[in-house]
Structure formats: C-alpha cells, structure tokens
Image (cartoon, rainbow, N blue to C red; front, side, top):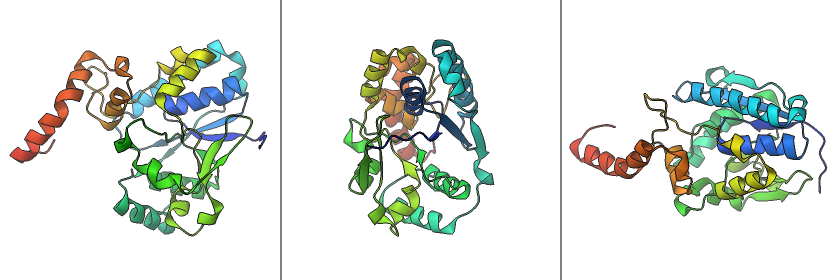
Length: 256
C-alpha cells in the first residue's frame, strides 16, 4: 500500500464528484490538493461552476479551517491555449470511433502531457445504469487498482503502453472509478460534509432563471441516479418530456 505524501493533482469542476474527492482528500485525509479547472468556452455553465467552487471553498474553510492550508489556489487554463499533440488526438479519435467519449479527454490529456502531469485525478465514476457505463466498460479490463492510505485509485496498466487507451488515459488516475453517487452521498453524511455537496453545480445548459435545465446529460444522470431532489420541478418535467420533444423535432426536421 502506498503512503504518498506528495500533492494530489485534481481536475475540479465544481461538480459533485470532483468536489467530493476534494473534500475527502483535504478534510478526511489531510492531503495537499492542487485543483485544476480547464476553461472550455463551449460550456454554458462556466460561470455557474466557478461560482459554485467559490461557495464550496468558503463553506469548506468555515467548517474545516485546517483545509485552507491544504488546498492550493486553483490553476485555470483555457482549452485553446493547450498545445496540440497529434499522438494523443489521433489515439482519442480512434477510441471515439468505437466508444462515444467526450472531447474533454483529448484536451485534458494534452494538457497533462504539456504540463508534465502523469497523475491527474479525474472523477469518472461507475453508474448504476449500464447505458451510462460506456467508458467504464471500455477501460475496466485495462485498469490496475492502487491501494493507498487515502482510499486509492485506478490507473491504466503499464503493460498497455503503446495502445490508444494508455496514450489517451495514461496520465490520469481514477479515484471514483468503482463508486456511485449514492455511495458518495452516504459517505458524506457519515463524515459530516453532506451539506457542502449541495453547493455543487452539474447542469450544462442553465435556464434563464439560473436553474438546472433537466435536459442535458448531467441533469439526466442526476435524475437517473435517484438524486431527484437536486432538480426543480420544471427540470423534472423537462426530463420526462424532452426525449419525446427531441423525437418529434427530428421527425419534423427541426434541430434542437
């Protein structure tokens, strides 16, 4: 079992999963954490996420004052300032032809390569719904579980070097890989930081009233994972009617 005393690099988005890990590392295990936030101009939720991060830190430092010395200032980087890396992008595109994965795995992997970071924690998790486990199922067979004094993590096996999965995901560590959202909420209740997780943000397409939309993928995951209470009534209604509206729009030749 590793007893690592080095700083933990963490991709933090202000969302529930990465915030859970941030609090777990600093408040439960007294680890030094370096958060990173990559600014993707295509995300409509940037300001909501940054606002949530500020609110989370304020609440965290108030409840656990000792964590203020453990969490370093967040490092921000814009996607267009990340250097090209043809090897990574080509590997990513080959994977994407097989499994539908988001573009963040390309630019985040390129960012890690550019910065010389080979241990970036990203909070990809296991879903309780099989249709949400595309990446989990693809990577699981290529993973090793590394036990540590602070819960441990999964990483791509060294024997996979030279393969597309290693080229794209080899700079990452996956501490949440075998955990569900329900587990994390139960854990946070037991440890006493449940209310801080309520300050996290997840919606990609906030409404004009600054509420979660109920239509985007993260909103739908929240609902499917039985966290209904995180969505206002209007978002719950959209969750149920949106697939029907999309189908009708498609038949009518309308883009939504």
